[in-house]
Image: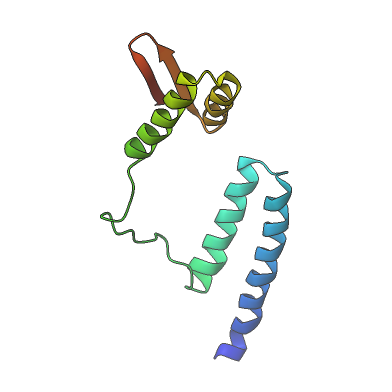
Length: 116
């Protein structure tokens, strides 16, 4: 039955496709839509057809770092950078977070963050 479905060839094709995807990702020249299409392809062929890619990856919640805790750490580091008057580095961090759709707002009361 495996030969009838050419399962080894289908898996080999997925590996070849993943190599091509890695080249595209390394180039940085891709859109969110392309990423969605790639994900959909892997989900359909690897998940629905071959059954080798799970729909969801199980996470052990005790090992996960919360987004809130991570952002507090980043903002604490940024606060120290600002205290040393390293404005370019502070702005670079803020701009980098903004590129990740996280808005950092500095005020007299302190620094806050929110998702766009």
